[in-house]
Amino acid sequence: MYRKHFGLTYLPFSIAPDPRYLYMSDQHREALAHLVYGVTTDGGFVLLTGEVGAGKTTICRCLLEQVPEGTDIAFIINPKVTVDELLASICDEIGIGYPEGTTSNKVFIDRINDHLLDAHARGRKTVIVIDEAQNLSADVLEQIRLLTNLETTERKLLQIIMLGQPELRDMLASSALLQLSQRITARFHLGPLSEKEVDAYVAHRLAVAGGGKHLFSRSALRLLYRLSGGVPRIINLICDRALLGTYVQDKSLVTRSTLRKAASEVFGRKPLLGSWSPLRTALVTMLVVSCGAAIAFFYAGGASSTFTPSVQTPAAAVQPVPAVQPASTQNLDSLTKPAGLSRSQSRQAAFGVLLKIWGLEAGPGDSDDACRVIAEKGMQCFDATGNLDMLRRLNRPAVLKFQNDDGDEYYGTLTALKEETALVHLGAEERKVPLSELEKYWFGDFVMIWRVPAAYRGAIKPGDKGPAVQWLAAQFAAREGRDSSGKSTQAYDAGLMKKVKRFQIAEGLKPDGVVGPQTIIRLHASSQDGSPTLSGSGGKI
Image 1 (cartoon, rainbow, N blue to C red):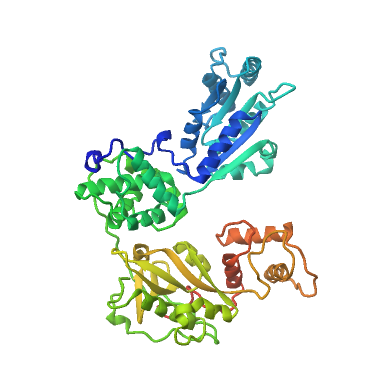
Image 2: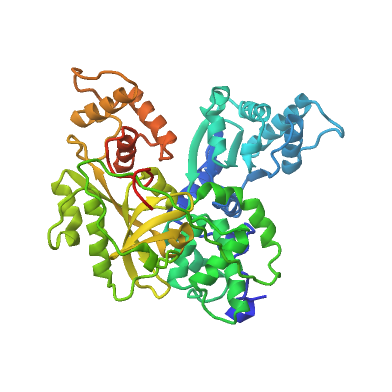
């Protein structure tokens, strides 16, 4: 419908796994290399996992276009089968004959073995590719493992590549499938695209489709990354609907507002920035919606609600938030920049509020170099990019960087965060705003303060030794009600790493065992050390 309007030869954001559109990020190249390795080596399993829509199937299609000569491929796309159905599918894919009505596994396996031996004698290789392998039952997985026992004295006769969602990794980590897991010779997990890669991904698909790469404004691309979480399929769905909406408006550039409305239609609701799990659960809805591309684009407005939440009163040593203008004079439903407030003024005011919340004395100009003042007090700035879920987990006041539709940047201090409402200080003003306002103006950049352990010299990693590890062990001993005093310095061993990973999982952090600022902030929060929080009952909102 919109191809001619934008000068496109093809539809750039189809969700079909067309290898022409495969954008080769560094991790996609590595994933393809793993699959090529699996095709060219002898025996065993190759495992490729990734979130829904990450591009696993597209990479596999690309693989099929460059398989070496003398390779027979059996591509299983419907793994919800019984053992005999799987064996029959393999025979059908490779062209192995079997008696009609056969239900005997032995007959199938004998025919497959005979074929593999014959193919080996002719110098041919056989590879089975199983897509959506997380749907395989335990019985079928065990039968697949047994198939790799088919071998000569020199080599395995069968190579198996399994593609699946992250839960496949969990399945293979179970003790029941230990033997299969031990036969995996190469494994790779395909994650989402970074913000820079999302920009390049969109430009790549537009170029392949025969159009220019500048059909999306810079602010729209930044929002696209936040809304999609970097998942290619979701990017395609949102971009396709955004181009349709821009065409309906007879415009030539996709703006941020059009992209947001397109996402609302795709998700069937107002999207939550950076919310990974809801994105996955909404895929069925998105696929259904994508089939209705000819339906007229409509605009969905988000209703906002207000309530009266509260923020924890800081400890006695912490000074209260400075007085602000009466809230009744403010537009409580807006995060627009106050008139006359420059970028530097907003930043100075925002850090001034943050320093006072922590009870830090800020002299003239100190807010311009707040992180230096903070470091002198034995604390540090945590400067990161995240989402509302991340702010809730860390549960600390933060300076947020906002950007309006004109591209103007300004800063505010988030001091309270409730289910639907937040308290934000902009300059000398205090505003109660719905979370939809944060989604509209905040793109994820934030700075918060955290208490640094005296022994901390950088991320604490498995295998480390010294005072930092002692401190870490003491934290978990205190959580378990044990006395760790008097113990000698210990190494960061497997036992401590297991405790750290369990804690990280419970706190919604990446369970890598590396103890950095996020893990330490949550450790301090669980010990209730008196630090100011976003969720409390003593303050006002």
